[in-house]
Length: 191
Image (cartoon, rainbow, N blue to C red; front, side, top):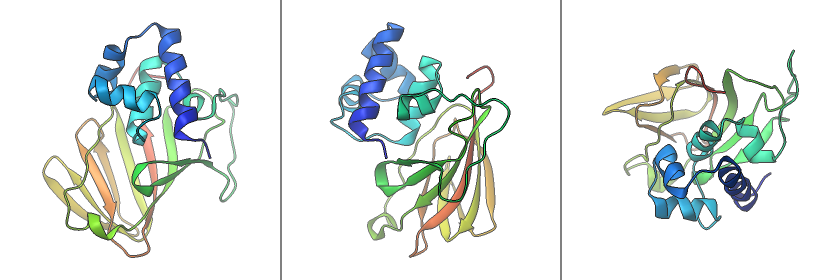
């Protein structure tokens, strides 16, 4: 598992290498300059969307920011059960990247485990957004999904396909959490 400090250091190095300012990256990630600095220095944990937007702005594969290595495979890749690249993010969400070694991906596939958190059940769901589209298929458990004032309760076997540029968020609503397949498709013309 890669730490926030390691990922933050790679983000800082890429920003410097690309000649971008904190303001440039603040605008690219949709956070204030102060919040961006906290994320880049490892003072604050950041959501998956933050890493995704950084990778997009830098023109690199998200795996490079997470691991420090470039994907190399171009014909196919196999990920055996439980062997995806683990990424633990805020709110206890655990992502397993299912194609981390494949180069020039058009989509980012993840197996996601969202924990049930009692305090979230009656709270407003935090929203995020990134350019592109997303497909989520519920494997087990249930989730509450919100997008632009609409709310959907999804259970095992349900799926949702949406414009991920629209503010959206989700929480697990089943006591055992929710496991889902998430395929994040990049905007046209991005790496």
